[in-house]
Image (tube, rainbow, N blue to C red):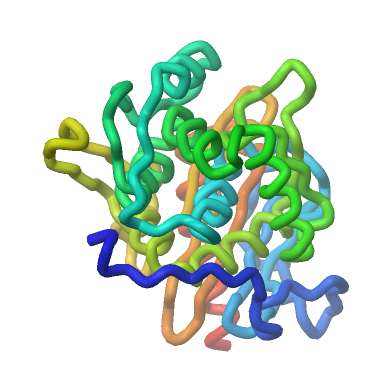
Length: 285
């Protein structure tokens, strides 16, 4: 599958997909009848036009946990081919286990194509996959994180700072972003067909061959299966709370939303569902 998917490696985001830097009464839909949002921050936009539909503390800097891995995938695909093989090392597995991160259950010695490893990164949110990709395409994790921050600036994400490729807490800080910045990233990332395919998948299996053993990965995104939903990424740490970047194609519009700092895991999904429905109603009005 991976070999058949064309890469989108450019960083430019068309003008119609840019999030306005200033919001006015004419560009922000009234939130009087909007669903209640319990999370610390939220943002919903129509990426097809740039119209902001909902905004709550959208420029407040806060940790975003595994939403970080969307940037990891985006940066990798600037240079990598889907068929490139990444050798898994014990250090990749140990990093995820020792850091308390979720894993894709990768096995040292396996050589996995980039196009397949992205499923391990984005579905079960494998910190081992993030470490392997960052180590390979930095080169080195430190070099890769520098690329992530350079890419964030090129996209106009000026309230974002990454400290690693996975969003796990570090002794030196967790990094930060905003709901608005993460919507900019989501808009750009979903233009890559390989990212869109991976984040739209509820499950993905990789059969064993001479390079690697078999794998079965399952998405943590409970929105998948709802009409039009195409991703995008879940996240959680104690500092970040439950986070969700989500997107859906509905009636010619691509709605993209971000929820940060939710205290209830399941409520982030029900809130996203309500915001998608409400946003579509606003656009149809």
